[in-house]
Amino acid sequence: MKKPLASKLPDADMRAAPAALLRAGSRAREIARQTGTAVVVMRDGKLVEEKVSEARPADKGKETGKVV
Image 1 (tube, rainbow, N blue to C red):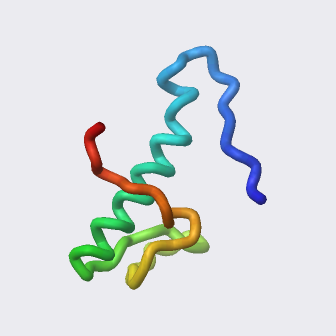
Image 2: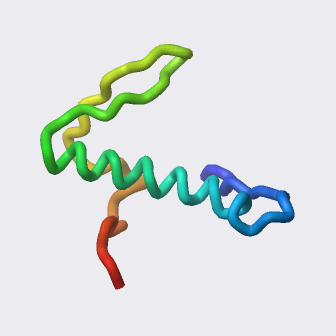
C-alpha cells in the first residue's frame, strides 16, 4: 500500500495541495472517460496521451464532482 502524501509546511493551504492534486487528477480521468478523450500526462520526461477506458482501482468507489 502506498504511503499517503504528507506535507510538513506550516501553511494549511500548502499542506492540502498534494491531496487536491490527486483529486484533480482523478476528476480529469473521470471526465476523459465520460467524454472519450485522452488525458495528457508526463511519463519519463515526455508528454503522453493516455486513453482512459475505465476507472482505475484507486478511483473506483469515489464519486467526483458531486456537491454535497
